[in-house]
Length: 402
Length: 106
Image 1 (cartoon, chains in turn green, orange):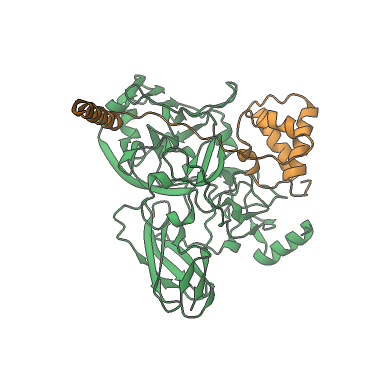
Image 2 (cartoon, one colour):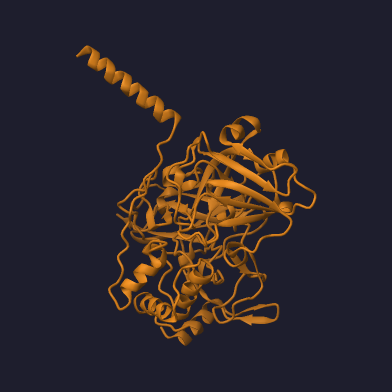
């Protein structure tokens, strides 16, 4: 397709969006790529996953993982920024340094974390901001994820607030910087450091050493990682070993340029008119996905089919998940689980029905949250250059056989 | 024979205890991401794959020449990749665009 035709088509599809008096041409959005196969090589402590890179490891969960509220550790997706990751950490010697604008700089061992602080448990969704990036056309910058750069686990650890309290924050403290043990090849390359505004600190932010009742897998950040429920995972630093408290935020590529979206109402832009003013991606959009069946599954007509999937948002709470089997005209409510894992967790849903006619059948799911937000159709999602925050209505197409 | 069995049992139990109390670390697999044959392949291989897998590069999707040039520039400016001459930069950008381009200059 010629470029001009492309935009003509895009405009026909999505219309033009007027934002703050500026007319934006719309990009085009499709369903994310959904047919990638898992690799035949398993990474340590993992079952085979969709594999994009080994240095750094980038692994995606296949769709059929998303049928239960908790994602098994060995099926949990993996995303690192730096290629050199310690392959052995001695838990008896590991410490985390807390330094900067504090009454006293401290080092806390794993054992001290487990014995000298209140232990807390919290279930939360961990999702890459670029999950579903393949939905964005033209191709957005970054790893071309399909639907599985996310998971949900029960995390156990200690409150970040409690650890900082032990060190004593100074009055002028305003930013908390986090750094892990992963490194670049060259010493000159800056580490993957992320910062949190002190005013965003809350009791749900934890330093976790356990995931679903086990030590964290190495590739998910053993022995300690940061959990910031409700937000995309760009700041959930793995193998976290250093926390520095400062007055001013440092200049950081991964804060100043990456993981940012247009700072306008639609959080959108076009390749020709990139928006200069940007903001961090932060809060997760309401989203849902069908884990079973998957596209290509053969099902019997007149036999009960139980659709299974998960829904989540940033913590407002899922109000309902609806299913459509007629292309999005009629919607029926799915059954939600009891929500006992809490508001930051997946809500598992089921929807049982008997397909009538033979042939291809598309099943869609749409989640709405307590704030009144609902997932838009895939085609109505607006483009942004980083391909972040996609939350289009999901669909799978099965084949009904007599 | 009996003492041998006893010894085996002791070793087995010791093994179980060790497993429960510590971890032995991990060994990362090597995954081959083949590069398309083309002018500048070896130069590109040396400059990009030194720091990260070829998978990391090609999983950015098929992109414009401007995109690849900006990525290479980012690798140099932000991540300090030692690609020093304009000729080297051009070689890498041309290889990427020739083999992993979307046909668009911008």
